Amino acid sequence: MKITLKRTEEQVELVKAMASKNRDVAYEAQVALAEFIGPVLQKVVNQAPTMSNLFSNFQFNAEESPSIPMDLYYDITDEDYITVWSQAVPGGLPSNTVTPIGGEMKFTTYRLDSAVDFDKRYAQRSRMDVVSKTFTRLAQEILLKQERNSATLILGALAEAVTKGRHHVAVSSNAGRLLLDDFNKLLTLGKRINTSWNGGTPEGGINGRGVTDLMVSPEVVQSLREIAYNPINTRQAQSGTTSIPATDEMRNAIYNNGGIPEFYGINIIEIQELGSGQRYNKLYDSLVNGKVNDNQTVGGGAFADGTDEICVGLDRRVDALLRAVATDSETGSEFSLVADDQYTTRQSKIGYYGSIEEGRMILDNRALFGIAV
Image (cartoon, rainbow, N blue to C red; front, side, top):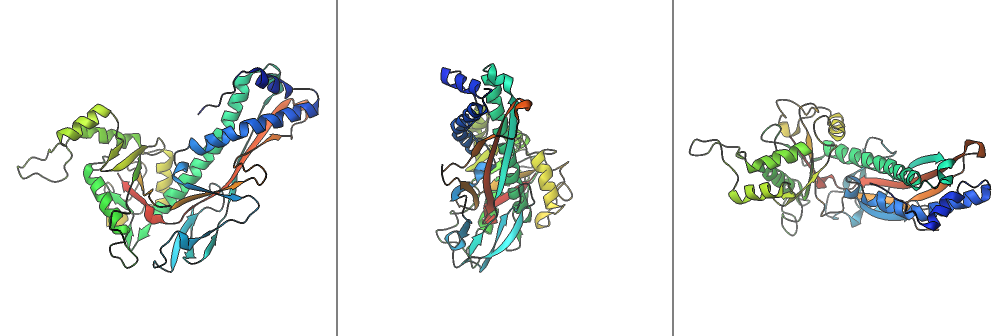
């Protein structure tokens, strides 16, 4: 992500004015730049993330007390009470709230903010690169907080997700490798979890719900590329051999593409923070707390970050992951960028303060699945 201010005559003069000795002129210039760059930062914050973009957005007025009518998101013939996952504070552990379907659910929002500053002499010298990097850093810090909040909420709900006594995380057939058999098991798991209220076939058949996306580490994508030249079977063949390759058409497609856009109709999303020893994998290890799902073992024992990794599946056909974001009643903007006036003249600095108020929740954890590899 990179934000660049073009070196036009108007923008150069505006940046120079921020370093004016006249405090009123300098502050007006800072405010003008904030009004100009604020909408740009909002677009970046909304489009650049990975985990955060899994949530569907809805806006509310910043002065209101937001709520959600649960009956609009659930079948009224479902159970009387459902569990909603949310966070009370940014970075906090996700908590589950038991809510009646026919009720109005109030939820907690929190503020994500960042403050940056740079020396006035850079504005005097029209250093547009310094000003651009300052706003880039501000957006990056907001994005980082959003990503970590989203990951904590998703992984926390996945670690505790149990539907009709069935955990939402399956275990791979081969330790350290994801095969077609694992995708097959994941599809079946999704169908067994997403039943109707009486445990039977849901209205519209079993194809209405299931896994659409799978977030994996670069190492898992590597194992998928290996299908082009490694065996894929999990059972011994009738001929006695244990080496069964994928079809020629599949192997050629994988070899020619060099990437894995989808498998069995499931989109593959590659995330750097997933994988053994990585940030999200460690987070899941701490949240799952050594549990073994469905009485199956992972590499001979409970899930452990050093030897195992989690692949996160999601059903994006339903509005299960929601992000409520506050908008300013005057400007209608989600992202607030203001000139930071805490700096006095003798500090010779120009500062900006950016913030966004949001709240994330998972209304239905049946949209979350996983494979422990």
